[in-house]
Image 1 (cartoon, rainbow, N blue to C red):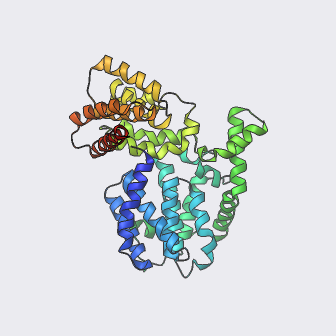
Image 2: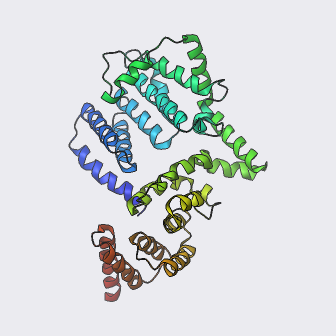
Image 3: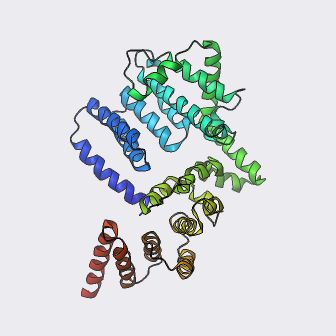
Length: 374
């Protein structure tokens, strides 16, 4: 029901896989297999599996170029910050001519940046965004991204094996570019990527938004540095809910992606795109998402329980998603165990195959039995 549960499950699954792997080539091959799995069926869960295996491989073989390159790209995808991926690759740039894995990882990062910029009408290149920060000072950010993609493509030999669905794209990007201009752009990107520069820009951005200059605010901003993606990018993450169905698994996986912005989102007592959701999928569905947001993200359990009561009185529906949120809230306000079990029973009547609810009931029953024995 939370990010910890998902990560524990992934650790168990990946640990079983890794026990059977004995060499770096087997580890990196498994990473490539998980990428194909993600490509065939994109989801937050398959991305997490891909990323976490690449991370395990990198930690086990920190000097292997293939492992480093795979980790750099998946880390970028997971965090949506190109600076993170680039920083991982920088110490190994001297080997780029003999090991094209590095160039291919950079090509993929810049290619992804181009795709996102075009799909979002350049909103991902705005000054306060991760891509905007590292492209600061570039006259034409999108054009410069394309130049960098072509520049790194020159270091990828035609015989180098890339995923089948990218062969034509890599080939198409192999065009003549002005190397001096590309190196100038790359120098600017590296300057922007430095931790000091990024931290300075984060502080400047937030201070300009809030018109505050106190030292205390600077310290607070430093503690919440992961919120610099801005509300615009958070909303893009949440637009997945505009397409039905919004199952419990979908809700949990999507909210796990924005838990890191919890402190920033505490300023928004209502789901950030609630009105848009209401217009797109109807008031009831929008309120269900809002309840999950209040509980999983804001941790406002008492208010969430009150809103659940209001929703049920208005619509008279029995919804497994709402019941699951209610169980989550009851657990976190230290409700008597027998009351939580009754609510889980209602959930299991609606969704008998909900294994997590079943296991939670068994655990609570065991706790109750132990308490009575004492």
